Image: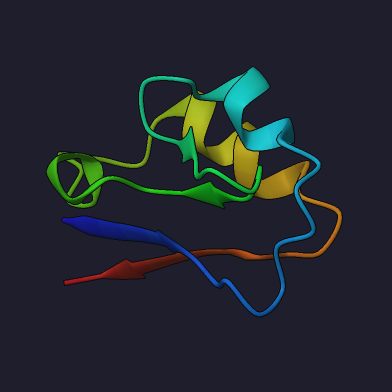
Length: 66
């Protein structure tokens, strides 16, 4: 089961992840992406999540298998 998070030290606020997977990612008050707690554990690696990872310019999205 994939676990998704955004590395806050790398995210620059481009929000491309929201374009590809708005059901997973959200923006904080300063415009940086994060994954709300209820969306961190995914059933599977979906195509929209793959696209979000592939299109993050800073490679800030971290996906680990539990």
